[in-house]
Image (tube, rainbow, N blue to C red):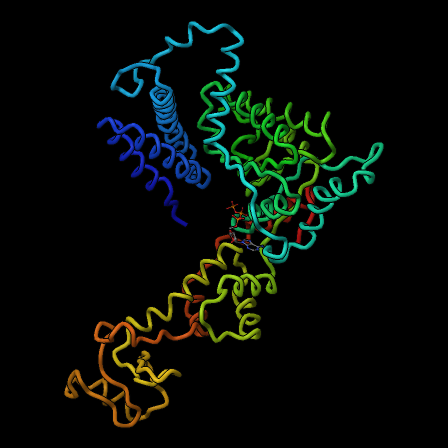
Length: 458
Ligand SMILES: Nc1ncnc2c1ncn2[C@@H]1O[C@H](COP(=O)(O)OP(=O)(O)OP(=O)(O)O)[C@@H](O)[C@H]1O
């Protein structure tokens, strides 16, 4: 698949620079941040190393500028800071800071880091139930054992029996790793700290290891909490020649913090959940800290059928259980995310039928009001199609046999339009355009890695 994230990121960053130059710093900062999300995702898929390095260099510059802006905006908000109208370019103001004693400095630094963290993490109490997660039975069991049991029955974890403190969920994209992590947090009634690795990475200007430390402190202070680090590979990839000092420091801090999890606190009160699509890129030291590694594979037919049904929800449809079963079989290779895209596509089909229809059948609704429904293909009327297709019939032609009226959607009074229910045919048509986002080679790689380091989560 063509990597569309980088061009999109560049588009956004151009707007950011424009806003920056025109003095609209709030907007500029928000656009820079938005572009980082796209850059980080795009970089994940960028295979060309030279191109990757060039982009990273550029992004580094944007990060620095965003940091300056954030500092400047914060200073303005706090009523202090410089009155410069350059958004803190050329160093910004540190005048207020100089007067503080060292304790104040520490507090200030901590609160600054906390501020930075709050923009980097999403802290919430999610509301995703186990039953919302299709399939993945043994992954759910493994997570229940790790998270729920220690809280409910602490006596089970006496002596040397300790709950796991780090779990890695790995598998192809869109298989529900983040979704599952949220279900864990709901079930455990824990605060969920989801870290956007793009934001953490964006603080790699000498402070990120402190950010990691603060993140873990926040987690400990919040009582029962789960720290979810998506794309953990981008924080803790394996050592490479080009690895910078700051990347090494963040990794070391992460190791130290992971070792501290579970010490001094209530058993199972802080859990670190990591997710990655590329487990083989993880540093072996980090891999070891995630004591349990659960493979989240592509869903099986029954899980796919269930997801299709959940995604259709209460949209008017004529689909039967059997239809879902057949469709579940047909979309082999689709991830959970692919299934939602497929449903979205299929749900649009009735709209397309309305838009493309050249004739509509009038009928009376149950309450007696006049309605029309699109009749693009009307197989039950042998006379209708040939006559209707003839231009000579004129635009106001009505078929004497079936009653179809020649008109377009725009001729239909809004209150009279009856939208066709979603049917199996709509899905079959949508399936024609869909494709699996994971190649068999990639899948094989996950299977191999699971044999060596993980366990099946199906
Ligand atoms: N097993 C599942 N049950 C229900 N919904 C699912 C499942 N798997 C995926 N989905 C749907 O797909 C969406 C994307 O899933 P999610 O973001 O959790 O995948 P992920 O594995 O974390 O992907 P990535 O690796 O790309 O971050 C979810 O919001 C959910 O709607």
